[in-house]
Image (cartoon, rainbow, N blue to C red):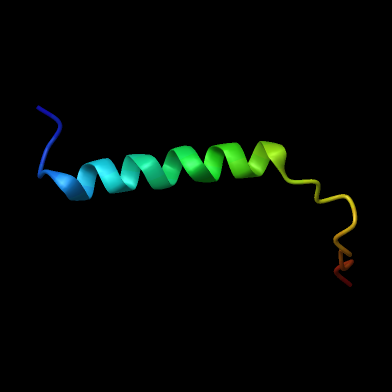
Length: 36
């Protein structure tokens, strides 16, 4: 139905996990650098 077996499901799970991590992680304390 969605392609070549387990690899597709692993990619979807990784994308799901990354999506949630981006929204749940506080990045306000990470220093940023200014370009010149």
